[in-house]
Length: 217
Image 1 (cartoon, helix red, strand yellow):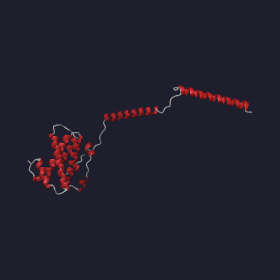
Image 2: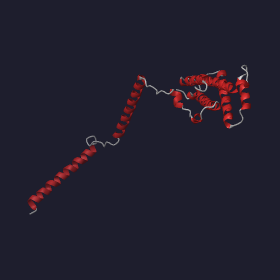
Image 3: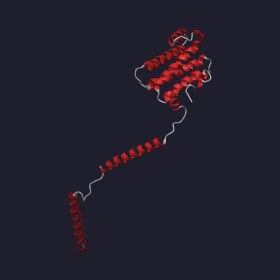
Image 4: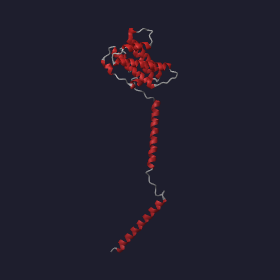
């Protein structure tokens, strides 16, 4: 599955180009995905121009011609802007001295390609419902399939949960110790005091019993 499924019936070649860009992104080949979106933009631009350009025309020349032609409405201007963006990012990736592998830029490029594809479809007589389509990052990342959890991932997740629970248990245990009162046996002063009070109470009880028995008549 692809965000660009709607493009199949309109232009299968363009669909295959941009679908490859999605696959490259999914496999984290971000710079290659950016370059592929530039290829998509150039082919889309040439398709729109048709006989208005020659095979040897550069992408810059094609874009300049399209820019002169597509000024009638916002949709046309947005399409041209998206194509310019894809060209600039693609060139930067091709000619860059270092491999940045910027996932954010790659994602932005694919989103721009999606908007350009929507406009391209509309210009080619696609049904109105296509304008309501929304880009899905989940579909881009998973390709329409639920991610399968490997046995290793399950084991690591289980181990991580067990470790977390063990740490939580130790923390609770340490907190509980703070609320345990010291034992009387461990505290000698408290033990002596309690023994004295207990003995005094016993003596008073005996005295009271003798008084009641022999003198309270």
